[in-house]
Image (cartoon, rainbow, N blue to C red):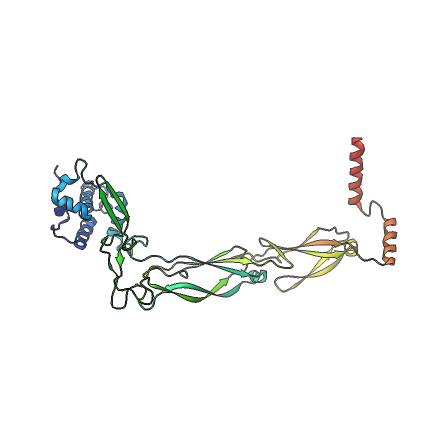
Length: 375
């Protein structure tokens, strides 16, 4: 079956402009799109015919070949058939058909002239107390903001960006060499599809300027070292009115002179005297919530023993619970003894037995048994 004339398929004349051609294509394609006519083979065939016609006539080189040779230009290894660039253009076709119905075009499409701004990072150092209670921090940072003089368009007041004359607004150009077609980013507009003939004097056509901004950051209670806070839309302004990027706050917690943290739990080492360890007793520890807690030392406590204070650790992020505080006992050996103290310790040592120091007595007994067995 002979193919219909491509101009006839789209309902346009041979003098049709690029804008008129795109409008005719959208109207014809929307009327026969398979998604609107599921299971309709005729509509599917009609859509393929409309798409083939548009793919040919929207390309300047293919259109010139078609006007000269007709359908024969694309038969028997001619300039290139529908397959050339078909798959790469499907996303553009989808945008042309359904961009407006779905609330606007997708941000990443080339030719819009609007580029999303970059995401930014800010390192914020806080203390363990601030991580415990949370805080509201004020930060200052230089960043790109939308130019007020041109409202972010990049064009001088009274003018506006124009369609790129090199690529016709597509953002890409194609070079045909025999059977091969090479497509690359348009060198005139760098893929934006638009150029600015009269750039704004304030921003030199970029649509943004650098300013120092002051932002408020809410640090919630219970954050850990390395926590990332995202501030949506507080990053770098987009090029020529494009969407703004995001700002990411990376938190680092300073080392604390008393407490060490492991998740929601806190640890601290408390030195106690040999007498306290032997006879027992108690001491007071200050916790991060601003209160004091009494800790009881059991009689005969050994160095390294941990005592738990429930709920005295770090608050758990987005929860009402809190971790625990573990107090590790560190028995301190007395130094700089007086003569009387030496006499007392000597008397104590003479009165000591295996029951007084069961751990050391057991260790040396095992060592003796091991080496006697080897001999």
